[in-house]
Length: 455
Image 1: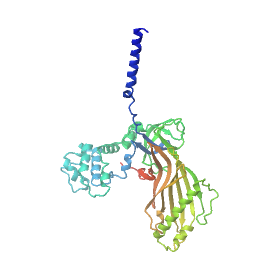
Image 2 (image 1 turned 135 degrees about the horizontal axis):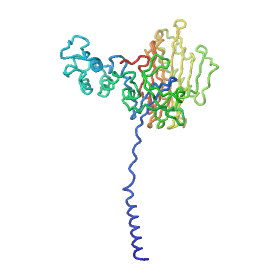
Image 3 (image 1 turned 135 degrees about the vertical axis):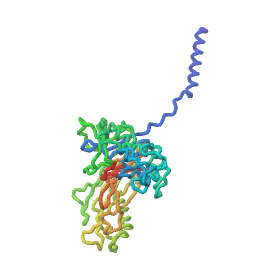
Image 4 (image 1 turned 120 degrees about the vertical axis):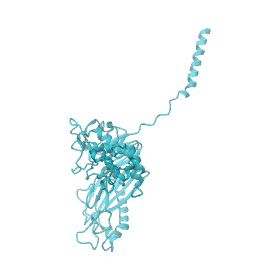
C-alpha cells in the first residue's frame, strides 16, 4: 500500500469519527407544541344562514359582543359605568349637539348625570379615547358593590369599548363577514370565511357571502340575532346541520337516541310505538330511575302546597310517562357518555281535579370500555307552571345534547340549554367541559334569543 493511499484512508476515518462524535450536538431540537386550535361552529339552516355560532380560540370559548348587550344602555350591568359608556357612545355617534359640555351643564338634569363623573376629564366626550374612558371607568367606584361587580367591570377594556363603538356605528348594508368577525368576536375575518359540513367524510368548503341580522321572532330562533349567509350555487341545497370553520383537528360526535319510550301517565301502559332500550343500558336505566325516585321522595313532599299524606307512596306508584336514553361514544377513550331523561305527571292527593305537577328527571353516566360505570350527576326539576301546587323554582333548564366535542385533548358537551319559565322559553346553547368526572359550564350562547339586541 502506497503512502498516499494510507494517508487518504486515515483522513477518511478521522472525518467519519469527527462526524459521529458531533451527532449529539446536531440532534434535532424538541418538537414545538401544535398551534392552538381556532375554530367556529354553527348551525346551517334551510335559508342558507348559519346561526347558533360558537367560537373556540386559544383553549377558551369566546363570548360575542352581543353576549353583553341585552337592553339599551346595559353593557356591564354596573352603574354609573353604563351611564358613562352610553353617553360616550352617543357623543361619538350622534350630532355634535348631543355632546354635552360638562363644564357648563346643569347637573340636575337626568340627561347630564354622566357629567358628575366625566367632568374631571375636562374635554368633550367625543374627544375622549377608548384608553382614557377605560381608565376613568376603572377609577370610578360603583354605586352598588356585589360579589360579581369586579368581574362585570372587567369587560370594560379599551378593546371592548372600541368594538362597542364599531357596533353602534355599523350600518346594516355594511355588515359583511369581516365586520361580523371583528365587531362581534374580535377575530380575523378569515375565521368565518369558509365552513365545512362535519357529516361529510371529505368536507368541502362552503364560502360565506355576507353577515346578516336575524329576526329572533322566526320559528328557528337564532342565538345571537346575527349570523352568516353562505353563497348560493351548488351548495345551496346543503342539508341543514352543524358546520365548522375547520376540516380537521377535532371530533364532533353527535348524540344518538337509543331509546324513546312513552307510557300512559295513568296506567303506565307502554305505547305501541316504543323502541326498546338496547342491552346493556336497560340495567343502567333502572339504576337512574332508582336514583330519581329516591330523590323525589326526599324533595317533592316537602314542596307541596296540598295535603302530603302518603305522598311518597303515591309518587312511587305514579308511572313515568316518558323515558329517553341518549349516547355519544368517545374517540379518545372509547367510553360511552350516556344521558337518561324521564318525565312524570303527578297529581297529589287533595289537589283540584285535573291539576298535575310535571316532574322532569335527568342523569348523566359514563360507561367505560371495561364495563365500569361512573355516575356524573342526577337531578329532578318541578315545572314552574306548577307553582299553584308546589314551591317550585322560577326557571328550570332543559338540556338536550347535540354532540360530544373532543378538541385539544379536552372533552366538551355541546347542548341546547333552554331556560324555561312560566312566561317563556329562552333558547340557548351551553358548552360543558367534562373534567375529572364532573361537568363544568364553559360558555352560554344565545341569551338574547327572543329579545332583539338593541343598538
